[in-house]
Length: 186
Ligand code: SF4
Image (cartoon, rainbow, N blue to C red; front, top):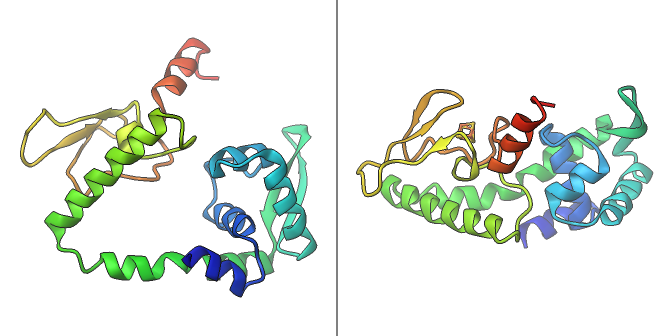
């Protein structure tokens, strides 16, 4: 509802808002139509339509990818950056509400939400997650250990309940890790 209101206030569709916000946040994923479609769990034509509208509005531009001339790279115009900054704050009322939850309850809520996210990802209801709990580098705490201290083998770092990341650029799924290992990291 909040996202829809923010989109309407800037004459955007909800998908246009999501594309703008994602381009504004930067990689991963790469700024390409198919990567954005996977990220947003929509079809390629849906993202293409949204991008066409955003280009008409002067918020997004595209240029040939110098590394692969078959593809285009997308980027925000100055107007696009301004609009993306404004609509990115659609989450602010939720953040204000959840900031009043005390820390132990907040950590419990985060753990429960991460559990739901992990299950939805394993059921293929969500295509992309970058949370520690779905990452190859995540070593969960010993069962029933309190406090639960996990470990990230990539950063070689302890992860307390509040350190769990939900959008980590170094995240790699078990499948991706196995594929990279099989192809020598390509
Ligand atoms: S690489 Fe990132 S997502 Fe993976 S366990 Fe470490 S901090 Fe978490």
